[in-house]
Length: 374
Image (cartoon, rainbow, N blue to C red):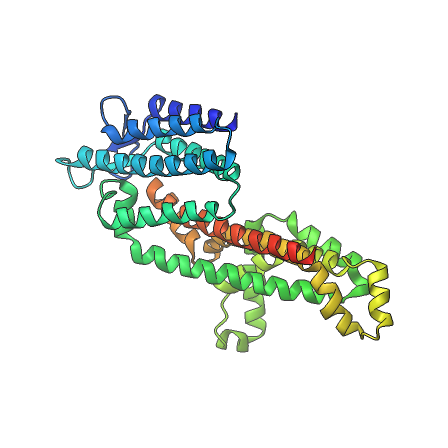
């Protein structure tokens, strides 16, 4: 039923909503371009493949039906992307250089419902490798087709060509910022977990940080860092600044303390009393009990907490641009300042991609560790 609904929604988006918008420049909304009479056969072939994929879902052999549906849906993704790129190139040919053909609501929704249908097909196929394979196949296709110029007419590709180096630098900055904050958060959570008598205060502290708006916390940290640097000039000489990565790292790490601290506490409490008594009876020291019993048994909980914190860190790092930390947030805010939707997307799409990649990778590690622990 889910696949049927996704297919119906896909067809409604494809034929009921504009797929592209043709504008005089990057700052205006532009005129809608619908599928009827404006696109080549790629779009209609993609629609037919989606219908065929839904039909084979009804087969008796779920594994074969799911795998076949995945193949058809991946082909539909490729055809839809190629059709949009070809039509965009046709629309802007002969237009002034500033003219842009951008993806409209129908195209975005069509891709979204295709992703839903793909997820259902992968689950029905029951093959764990099929999900990563599908993602890899789509990425490989986009890279190869993009290098071949298949999407050169789309405004998003035009914006990327103009800012490729800026975006790549921003991705690296974003990864370093979110990764550094995660490491700092892990160290902070570990230190807080060692303070046994103050766990009640720690819980109130890390919980209280969550209710403080991120912008307010970052602004407060800028003021605090400015005062600290004024009081201790040697810190300024060491390269620290009130604006830049320093307040962003501290602020993001502060938000990560709650999931990391709770995960660490639950992981250390995962072994039951009988297991701990047996370890003690065998002559293990508290350190050996921690390394050989508590951490191995609690490892799935720890990795789960790390997964939550890592995804949260990638999202929060976007706000680091507000205090001069750079990253993909800078690209997003530049796009907002210029009222340029494509520039906003150039910053937002990599953030989403990084989050999904980290979530998927750590989820697989967590499941593997759980199976090993069981």
